[in-house]
Length: 132
Image 1 (tube, rainbow, N blue to C red):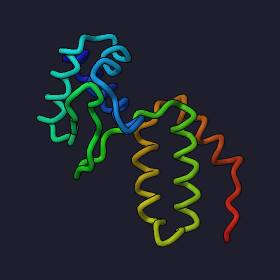
Image 2: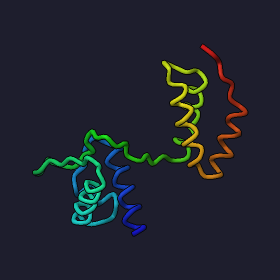
Image 3: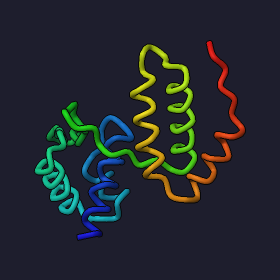
């Protein structure tokens, strides 16, 4: 089950990374068969993800617009960059987003592994907010 779950997260991440993928491209990236990709696409649809498909040789899969925000898979540097941007937005209240940015920052901080939390703490001490 864990392998399937992690594969589904990887699939959502790939589908989020660019507008469209062929089944073969997804299979190669994930080191699985085309059949496994099709089964995993069906699982994502069952979970409520709006995965759209276009048939034919130029067809493929894409994440369609939907009510759910897919989980983001960020590397360490991306997670830190998002946290810094959210901190700045929370402090400046740009366009009335201060509270939402603060809430998102708190959620992100709770999910960070200790090594990133420590780095973010060091960045917090080094950054200086400049009001506009």
